[in-house]
Length: 362
Image 1 (cartoon, rainbow, N blue to C red):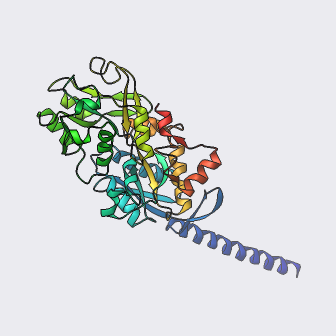
Image 2 (image 1 turned 90 degrees about the horizontal axis):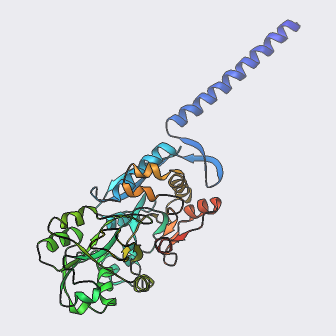
Image 3 (image 1 turned 180 degrees about the vertical axis):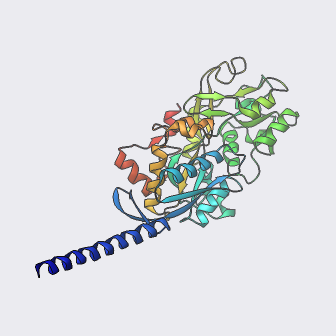
């Protein structure tokens, strides 16, 4: 009898083991089919649903588009539960519009110029105001100065009576360029042409304008190069740089213009045509999300950005070299932007202090 009872006990144990193995197998199958995965997010361990997001990255030809591609790749490789796709749009304004229209789906590469989206700004009247851009991390630079072929134009005041190219009509950065001219008292004394950087370079080279706002390459904090537009301009002759003043630029930023002062050391762009220290300005780009984007999703995005070293970002674009712990949390303005709650939670846990980009570029 004892033998029979022992056999029955063995069979009961076998049945229990089979049931346990079957449940484990079903759980693995559910996970493989994209059901749920377990990871650590927001500092808590728990089941997180597999989540797909899109990254509004702008035009494929823009220098910030590779930053969107890089983030998508890093998330796909380094997150256990988020997959991402970089999406081309009509430009940075298009990126912000996607985050505005589909806030739970899109992260965007924004630029400081879209501070003009804030309520009360004339630029926002036609598009409808939007002030929900929440900072996640810094991205690329858009550093620029006024350039000319005329060596006699040394200051903004010297532009009086000249023809100056600014941004396109309706572009978000055009009000900032006009504000600079106004701050120096010459806005009403110049003839304005509206074409933007590429068109401005062509018109300057063809002699149709006397000066133009122009981008040059800048890796934070002080690695400068002329870049494609200025190099193309130099096929006609030497390019000279019109200096600005840091205090005026900071005053304009305080008035909600997308202007971060940048100190360019003497000779950094050209030893002959830029022999003295130059103050230019940056309209930085950065990763942002609407507050409606899930906090845990943004926490995970921030974690991946933070933990990915600059060497990996640099493989996608040269200015990725400044994606360091010093510059990732550097904001275009500490006054006008809030950090996304998910990003803030990550930074707080890491003991990271948000920085004013202008202080780092002084």
